Image (tube, rainbow, N blue to C red; front, side, top):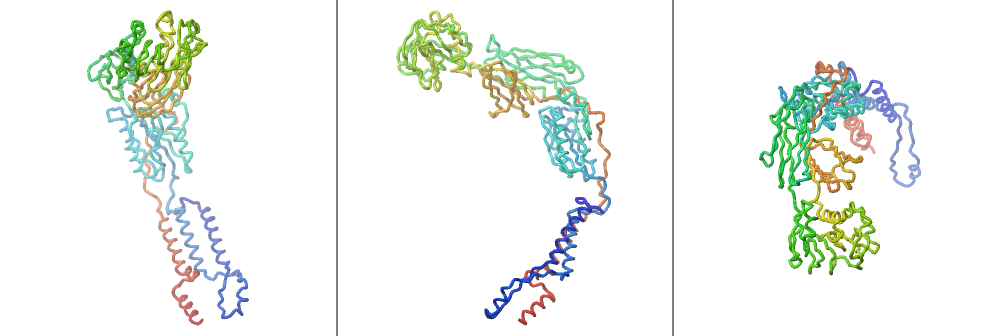
Length: 631
């Protein structure tokens, strides 16, 4: 006979304290008398204080005994009294089930995940009935699937619901989580059990030298040959913007050389293929060039399929190349042709000022020394407007030097020339919403106004006279076009890779950086110098905007670790011998609780109601009735 929740000493202490209080209540009584008098003559006597009596003997010993026995039975029920041998003390175990992306690989006996589920359930069945177990699903994050449970059916149901994820295993984090969970439990510490093939990242290569107490390893054997896509990068050619330069990396995770074919398809049509032989544990890169102006889906596929099909295929959406329509109203269109022809994103249309219309479907309108009767509805560049200038003109200056550039703004990026001489220029008076991009000592000569539409006003002609040979003039013109249509001039880089932690190299001057998920929500990231890092556990597209550069990461490939973890030498291996689930004891607490409750109820029925003036039944009730009749 033994108690599960209390020791016998604790039981005696609690029962003794409660019993002492109950006995004290039976020995201590403050009595009050109710007097009924016919006149006020006896009122003085009734105002006397009630006499306090200290009893020297217990008037109702059977009531006290019944209460003490009932309290003892309830305390035994709380302590969970059992008859039989207590057996070994229960322990708290943590089962780490590998749910990394590699568990989707298929071997001769099904997927690795299927084998791991069977092994995990066999371990659960081997545990004693009183032991508690917590199931933790481990990939890049350690996620508890259950609390510490003794219900084996609930744990096995959680094991069956476990599926491979898209990230690689972070075993160090899972082990630390298991140790922390066991430290928070009051019971005896049990085993930390890992079930899986043990593929970890490079950062966990030294995990085998760490000593892990109470570790048991249940390995899942693997003989899987896999050669898969590691990454794909695309960017537009610097010489031909309609051509995509493609770089693909193929990695052999197996133990034998693999000869595979990397085939590209765009919109379902073949776009190129390469045949290559990859040594075991090595990676090879392949380059392609694909010319296409329109957008669509580019698919990369490795043939023939292998045991792990998750990284045999990647799909990237290629954006179509958009052109910026620029309508130039000028009497000297030949001045603008070299400048606009240098930007392949610009489609220039030249017209006479007499052909002006404000309904022209243009992205940007250039007005060369021409003031239209109605301002254009599109973004406009005004060059030395003779009248009706959007910005009030203050004066006209000749032979002046540009003194200041707004180099901290995209319109003045890269402009630092202090010896730029203007033969003739208009000087403007900027308003509250205007930005002075270039200034002389007399005032602003280049003014920009944000809003819809955007407006830029130049007091001088940037490609006429000696200015056409200055580097600052075409650079200013390019900055204005990029400021008005940033999406057209944005530099695109497309990448296909695996989920998990992604490192992105940035340029030296990136300005404001944003990282957006596929649904438009912001992803947290860290930036150290020119390196940006973010993490995602779910496949999807992530867009990074950094200045005039946009990087698109199509993270649809599973993350596969390359190193096989070697468990420590002192770690236990294999499933332990099953422990019989037959109970060597009998549970008594339900009957004890019922008996204690019935005892208190019987005491109340026999003795308790009398104390509150209620009929108690039997001889006591008859005596009380006779007394009332006599009065």
